[in-house]
Image (cartoon, rainbow, N blue to C red; front, side):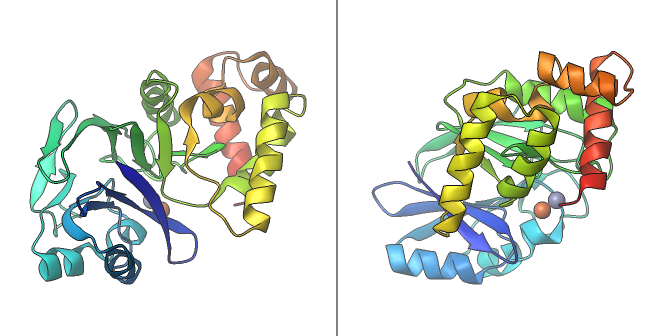
Length: 254
Ligand code: ZN
Ligand code: FE
C-alpha cells in the first residue's frame, strides 16, 4: 500500500492510500479539491472515504467525494457526522476488497468523545488524537480519557507509521524540547523536522517507536517528563502529569 499525505486547508493532511492497481482510499478529507487533483494525477479510482472525527477540517470534502465518486463513507457513530454511509465502532475490523486492506477500529475519546483511529496495513490513521511530538487538544474528553487512548496507541507495533491530521510537528518540537531538553532522540528528530520543513516536505509520517522516544505525551512515565512535572508542581501520578503537560502546551501556543 502506498501512503501519501495530501496537504489541505491551512495545515491539514488528507491521507491517500492506494495499491498498484489504482484503487484508492482517503482519510479525513477536509476539502475535496486536493483529493480530486491527486486521483487525477496518479490515475486512481476512489473506493472509500474514512473519517476519524466530526470536525469540519476533517470531513468538509467528504460529501462531495461520496456523491461524485459514489463511494462509502466510514465514520464513528456520531450524529454530527450526518454524511456517513457506514458506522464503525471500537473493536470492529473494517475490511475492503479494493484496495485489499483491513483496519482495526479503536475508540480514542479525548480530542472529541467519538474520535476513532484506524490501525492496519502498517499505518495508524489517527486524526487529531496523536500528532508527531504532540497530541490533540482536549475539546470534549478528560485528561484521563485522552491518556488512556494514547496508551492504547502506544501498545501498537513500533514500526507502525503514524499518519496524523495536521502538520504541527515544528511547533510541537519547540514545546517538547522545553520539557525534555536533554532527550537526544528528540533533538535529532527536531533537526530532521527543521530540515524537512525548510524543503517544504511533510514531517510525517513518523514511526510509532520514534514517537515513543520523543513525544512527551507518550512519555509521562519517563525520567525527563517526571522531572519536568516535579518542577511544575504536578501531582505524582500519570494522569496528573499528562494534564500538566497538556495545559502547559495549551498555554505555550500552537
Ligand atoms: Zn479535530
Ligand atoms: Fe483537525
